[in-house]
Length: 457
Image (cartoon, rainbow, N blue to C red; front, top):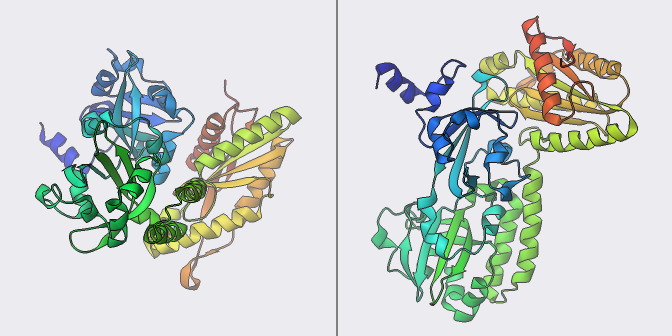
């Protein structure tokens, strides 16, 4: 390996249009560049994993077409990007067979706005233990196909196997600390009675859903987990899976209340699991709503924006109206972060979000794509001039200083691109791409202005 290649692997690849194919070949498993839902460049090992002779057979395809059919409509890559976590999924090979992989996503803006690097590693060997006793994929969908942190098998109340990541979850590097111990050793004392009671344990084994519990770590601390129990065939054993939900618990305070209720139910041994299933359904709905909004500004994210745009397109098609897609990229935002710090930058983004909401109607949508990029879905309009006037009002907002923290103010500008349905495209992806392209033309020609997209030829 050359010194140049070694340095590139140490400090991270710097993608360009010229070197992206060579860099992707360094990744094990499948690696591809991705933009607007499509595969741009595929590495050779990715083509081999999918059973194709030539990687060019995959380039240009919708990435969703590479996934198994049960993931249809899930916007898996968008979800991974917004959640900033890898997940498990099933890829469909050319011969119709399936392969389980762990998918990771990273930004590659140097290859163009919205460009990602998608990696998929074969993890079939990790879950070979579970293939004999899992009857469905439902629990993985309930966690958006994220892998469990702990997998262990139990017989006659004793632990007979635990995976490596499970050892890390309970805070030990030694298998002997866990294997051969009673399964109750994994849990907070409040849960010992339920796992020692054959009747209560039978009820839990009959429920294929996930529920919260509390694990006891070897250092004496406790962590909150989701657990699932699956009975083994032909015996009194079962498999226990657990996923650390401490971070989720801190982010979604209502989950803490749910855990307290379940712990009380365990102490009282009522085990009215039907009520708990209903509560978990409410929690899943709350988490779904959280997944549709930007964590900093509270604005809709890309996923919700696309849903609303598609609804607006259908309404506009029916009524003979237009829909404006207004792409806004801030000018000088990086300078604010560099001069005043990220807290000031966050305050500025929330201030700008409020200002943009003040310029639109309740029927319109202001969304944040990430960083300093915003999109406005301007619905039920008749002429392009209406979107132009809105863009002019937005530019006037940036003509005055905007407040930061501690009374400090700053000036930033905005470059705006405008695309219209149906003039410039028929789908959300097409309209966002056209508006983005018009915005970059503004960037190149001097910034702090707007431009209407040119019709596609």
